[in-house]
Amino acid sequence: MRILLIDDERHIARMLSVALETDGHEVSAVESSSSALRQVQKSAFDAAFLDLRLGKEDGMELLAQLRRADPSLAVVVITAFASIPTAIEATRLGAVDYLPKPFTPEQVRLVLARVEKSRGLQRRVEELESLLEVSPANSEVLAGDPAMRQVLELARKTAASRASIILLGESGTGKSVLARDIHQHSLQADRAFVTVSCPSLSRELLESELFGHVRGAFTGAVADKQGKVAAASGGTLYLDEIGELPLEIQPKLLRLLQEREYERVGETQTHHADVRVISSTNRNLGQAIKEGKFRDDLYYRLNVVALHLPPLRERPRDLERLATAHLRFFARQSGKSIGDFSPEAKAAMRNYSWPGNLRELRNAIERAVILCPGGCVEAEHLSEITPRPALDRLPEVGAAVTIAELTDEHIRRVLARTARLEEAAGILGIDVATLYRRRRKWQTETTEIRADG
Image (tube, rainbow, N blue to C red; front, side, top):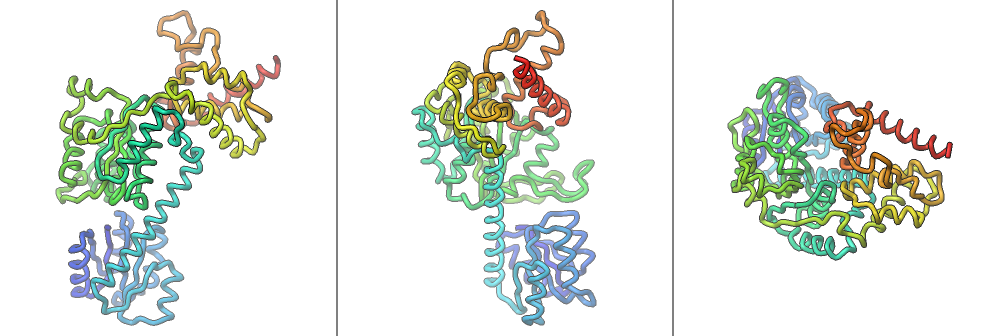
């Protein structure tokens, strides 16, 4: 962990620093309140050891200031003047533990073990809350179709190992969901699961996102920053769409996989990384290697275990079950009483090829629930997947269509293949508010047409 040590007794600070660094922690030591606050404002720390007496300064007051500056900082109070009232007051102000001087290295280790356990539980709660908000409880992973069941069985067998896994398949086939499922069945399930989207950032920002940076490393780097590799320490680092990783960063990722070492941008100090790497791609990496866009040595490091996720059109047994799971989820979320799909709606889903796979299915069902007043979903509520004159396929550039038709259909297809409006807006080069208004306009127009009919 990154630890801030605040103590004006230099010999005690030096001994505690040595003990912490011997256990593999990174320590920054300061002697005053102002120095401590500057450190917290410019860098992220996991824990702080705070002496309650800093010369003439009040450690209790500093404790409150530290908690306001960074509510996630775990502050451990250390003092040679221990008493029950000060322990109670420190706890009231947000201290996670209270350590009377003199203390032993073993006592320090026990305190930090409790801090790490608490942080791990908090991360787990946040991950579970995010899952409940965005998807119906991993329904995409729980497969009934033989093709997907075979993939899941192999994934569960390899979950307990530390081997690198690469997930292959078309966009929207559920690679990120399977990556999270592998983590949840691994020995690191109680540690962090951290995602890095490789296509979402420029080369410079992606390198900083992965490995972190130090203050002044580039324009805008006003404070030290831990990267996603450090955030995933002890857990799983998921690299989404690894085929888009810039060539300049690939040697650094190779070193991370081979030697478990890396440096932050603008820094020469080497850091150790204890992470399990899972990656995914919808690209043909063999072709990318031939074209010189991907390193073959990196590919072999990533490809210890390869799992091929079948597209939704090859999972006919799962289609209706997945659609029903999404229907119940979104109906409950919107407070509507919608029980099932009509026979015509089920036929429309079976006859559609689902080029956007699970992601497109989820979006289609969410739209259907918005449009459906109650009862059951009809085929007309699934207008995005039913044939439409002149818009059943993406018009070609130069065809006899208007710019508006071409633009509308392109936006619809991008929306069908992306999980979030922010992601779609980034691909399209427009802001989220504009995209939201356009989608709302389509939904309103569709409702008005049905009402007139």
